[in-house]
Amino acid sequence: MPERRLIPPWTWVTVLTAAAVAVVAVLAVQANRGPHPAAADRVKASPSASGHASPAPESTAVPGGSGSGRRIVYSLSGHRVWLIDVSDQPRRTFKVWPGTVSPGPGAYTVESRKDATTGYDGVNIEHIVYFAADAGVSIAFSNAVNGASPPPPSAARTGGIRMHKADGAALWTFGTVGTPVRVIK
Image 1 (cartoon, one colour):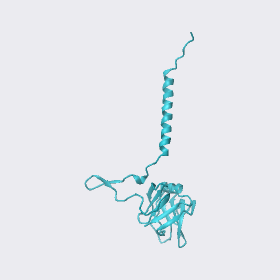
Image 2 (tube, helix red, strand yellow; image 1 turned 90 degrees about the vertical axis):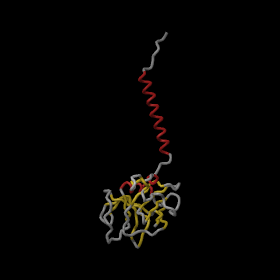
Image 3 (cartoon, one colour; image 1 turned 180 degrees about the horizontal axis):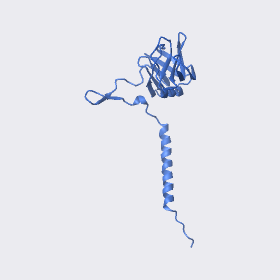
Image 4 (cartoon, helix red, strand yellow; image 1 turned 45 degrees about the horizontal axis):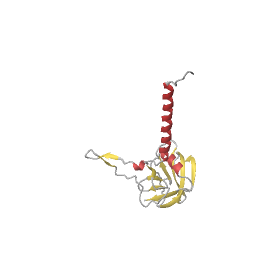
């Protein structure tokens, strides 16, 4: 009778562990393809006088009357930008610092983009997304290469709408040429 070889227990443990890791990886990839909550979907809370958390007064919900479909929404009064996907869900929202020249409310389109340059304030900027002009001043979203916020507005006429570095990278990826931009009051 031939000798029977048994598989050592450590082999079974290794095979079962590898199979479990593979299943978890497949499930993670599938979950990553599904919908993701955006920062705007999270409720900010601040302590109230009673000590209980209450919603923050500033809404990050997509403003009504800002169009539909995939677009960038820029609120002049709120100094806020939303990146809205094709299903009208906010993918990201963030505060911005406007220049001294602002576009009027209305519908625009991303006209061109530039990787990097020096802004009118002498700051190196990147992720420049141009969408409007006013009296010869180009209006564009951008961020400082060093991540700094811009200095207070000066007498210079600037159309740069600055944001944090991570927000600039997200807008750069989202705002390809032809992307609609909706400016609201």
